[in-house]
Structure formats: C-alpha cells, structure tokens
Image (tube, rainbow, N blue to C red; front, side, top):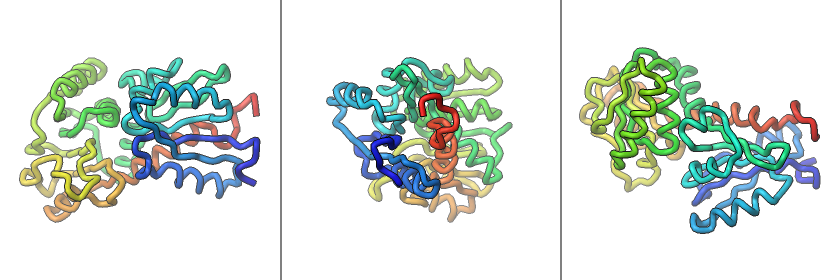
Amino acid sequence: MRGTGKADVFVMLAHPVGHAKSPGIFNQIFEEKGLDSLMVPLSCRPEDFDIFWEGLTAAENVRGVIVSVPYKAAVFEKCAGGHDRAVRVRSANSVRRNPDGSWYADNFDGVGFIDALKAAGHQVAGKRVVQVGAGGAGASLAYCLAEAGAAEIRLSDVDESRAETLAELVAKAFPTCRVVVGAADPTGMDLVVNATPMGLKPTDPLPLDISALTPDMTVVDIIMEPAETPLLQAARRIGCKIQPGRPMMDYQVEAMAEFFDIDRKDRNDG
C-alpha cells in the first residue's frame, strides 16, 4: 500500500514545475515495485526559496529532492557535502537526507547524458564538440564530455563570462581536452549539443546556425518535450544522426533511484 504514514516522501523542485516528468516517472516505479513511496511536485517563487528550503529540511520524512531550474546552484549551497560531480560545478540536481538531517548533493545531468549517448552507439572519445549552454546542466555536460575523452569542446553561451569560467575549469580538470569559447557554429565539429532551454516553446529561436550542419554530425538536444525539438527536426532533414532528451532522463532516473536507495537496501534506520 502506498501513501501510509511510513511512506518515503520525495520532492521534485522547479519553478515552474508543471513541465517536470520526474514525479510521474518515479511514482510509476514506486507503483510497479510496490513501494510505500511517493514523489510530489513542488514549486516556490525564487524570492521565497530560503524559507521554502527551511520548511523542506524541517519535514523529517522527506528523503530526497530532485532539483531543476532555477534552483540547482541554490540547493547545492544548502548541502553539507556532495559528490565530486556536484562539487566541481557547484550545482545539484539531486540531494538526499543524511542521517543527521543535513543534505548530500549529486548531479546526474552529465551521467545520464553520457550513458544515453553510449547506449545509442554515439562516440565521444576523440570527437570535437560544440555545446550551446554553459549553465547548470551545461556545466555538468561539459565536464562529463571531457571526462569521456572528447578531443575538443567549444562552449557558447549568451553569458560569455560564464562560458569562459566553465572553459577554464574544465580545461584545468581535463588538460588533454582542448576547451574554448566561441560562437554557436557547428562548422567542423562532430557532435553538436543544445544544453539550453531554447526549443521548449514553439516560438523559441533555434539555438545555433543549422545551415552549417552536415550529415556526418550527431546532434543532441537535452530538452525532453517536445520529444523532437525544431533543432532535431532540422538536423534529421539534413541527414544528421540525432539524439533526443528523453534517454538522458531515463538513465538519470536509474542513477537517482540508486542514489535515493528507493528499495531501502542500504539503510540502518528503515
């Protein structure tokens, strides 16, 4: 039976939260596994975040939180510690409760991204990558692309200083990868990545110049809805290999489920 007083409660936090898929995905998993657990979508205005987080922390039966825009960095700062993946980008997309009530951060954006690419047969090692977007998810992707052996990463962002800072940090962590800041131009690249929200709305402009796409390129969009964004539609017409955002989420879910220990395998407190 689900939803008893002993239920594990998880939260999906975003603003707005209406587009979030995690609650539906996890609640289906809980149902299929017969777990007394539930995930609740919650939102708050950014100016109310500190008060909101105090309340969430005070709710002792909240075991974990999945975090989305615009709270990934803010939530990380509320944590007592975190995995290197979260620490290096100072951004959390998942946090779990420590035994003492504090929070531990991780970031599975890059993990899900790389695992999804590999599962689809797309190679990263030795490839030249142009990535548009150097924000929370983009930072995680850039590190993981370099860690997976990308030869070159060109970062493009509307906030050039943010892209420059990220490029310096990634290059320092993975010196064998050439990391530069440049235009959202895929010319001469092997892998093209959209790590921005552009494509969520029908009126959004394309995140990069599609006239430079060629059939030998692989184009990836981390947006889940629509399933095939205007960028991916254009890339398909040109003959590129494409990778939508949903597989990235699917692989993240696997990692998050283990992180949260939803099956209660590794708990000393029930």
